[in-house]
Amino acid sequence: MIGRIGCAAALAAVLSLATAATAETRPTRLSPADIAALAETGAGPGTSGVAGIHTTVLYGDPTVEGPYTIEIRVPPHTRIAAHTHRDDRSAVVVSGRWFFGYGATADAAKLKPLPPGSFYTEPADAPHFAMTGDEPAVVYITGQGPTDTRYTAAP
Image (cartoon, rainbow, N blue to C red):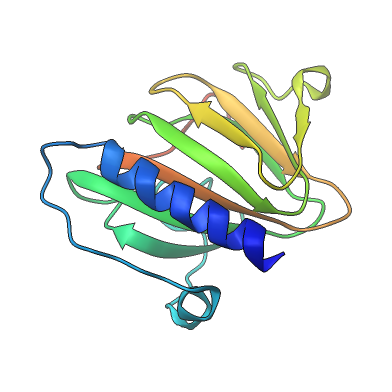
C-alpha cells in the first residue's frame, strides 16, 4: 500500500508542477507520515462541501492563483451531487473505490468505479459527480487556483 501512496504522491506533485510552467514553485517532499501530520479541515476550498469529507492542502493554496494539490478523504456512503469548478483539475485515487461520473445530474448509470491508482480529469466548467460505496476513498486533486465549487442543482 505504501508503494501506491508513494506513487500517487509523486504523480500528484508532478501534476501540480506541470499545471503552471511559469508559476514559481518550491521543492516539496512529503512522506505518508508527513501528510498525516498536516492540518486537516472539513470540506475545504474546491471540494464539494459535503459533511464528513476531510481536506488537507498538500501543496500551494487552492484559494489563490497558482498550482495546488489537495487530498480529500471521503467517508463510506457519501454522495456528491453534480457540480463544476472554474479550473482544470486532475486527480489520482490513492485508496478505496471512488465512483466518478460526468454530467449535469448525478446518474448512477454514468458512474465508473475507480480503484486505487486510477486517474481522471475534471475539465473547467465540466459537470461531474462522485460517490463512495462501503469503503472510504482518498483522492489527490491538482489544479490551478483559485478554485471553486458550483453545484448544477441544489446538493
